[in-house]
Image 1 (cartoon, rainbow, N blue to C red):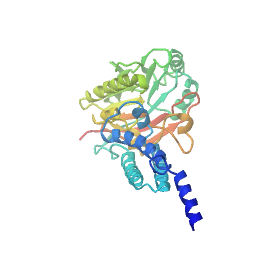
Image 2 (image 1 turned 90 degrees about the vertical axis):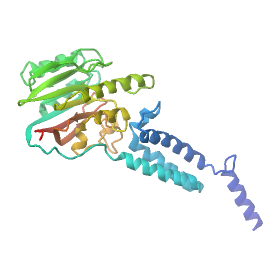
Image 3 (image 1 turned 180 degrees about the vertical axis):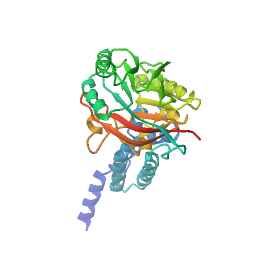
Image 4 (image 1 turned 135 degrees about the horizontal axis):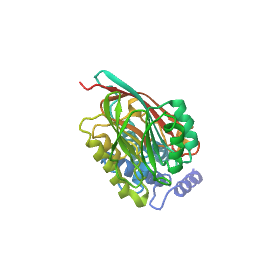
Length: 337
């Protein structure tokens, strides 16, 4: 008995840290501290500082380190860690619920339209976008990072053939260019100023005026967080100025529903079309992992609409040449009661 007790004591000492805590508790605590910082910012309705904004985009995936922390706490028999991990899991489950309503407007339907948005990554996916447009037959197309060559190609394929006779564009190279293609007549409207092109327009949709704005703010790079917040704030200001006019705001927002700056856009009265169609957590970026099981990624490409719209379908398309999946949403415009 004496030898066995000595062997057990030596083994326990080898498994403990410098203050007597089992070694498994230390990585558990570190994981929970990181997760708690991100969840705390989500609960406080703030995006915080790097690396919190970047981590918020992948909030549902924080379940993985949290479960690992729970297992490590159980292995260490660390009761505080167990309680901490359970609370973190509960908070994540609460915030993972998609943000916004799902119901349809009460008024009668007056027009249907299909919207497609695609970031073609410096124009590289233009060749893949052209057949996707032909196949999906959208009424409105929002194309981000559409450089001069991309715009020329889309003009040749669709504008000059009469398929999309109307356009609103910001020319540019690399990520600076963007374009809206429309089957409906467009009137010129001031777009939102940003580091990358964000054209705007007003469409006449079967006798109804619809405001259009392409979204493509700066991504939340560590050195560009201020620009990212400012440009999302400019999109919020545009959305808030709608004065009851039906609105479609679509594109690559470089933000998910877990970013406070994006939720402030929704809080102006807009709704996420993918959410309305039951696809509120489907990832759109990065395409390499978002398009294959287990569909790792974040939904940062959105079609936002005013309360006049309902959505019947949302489909995410993987296009070769870009790190974003294209998003197609079928909308119905309703008469306000």
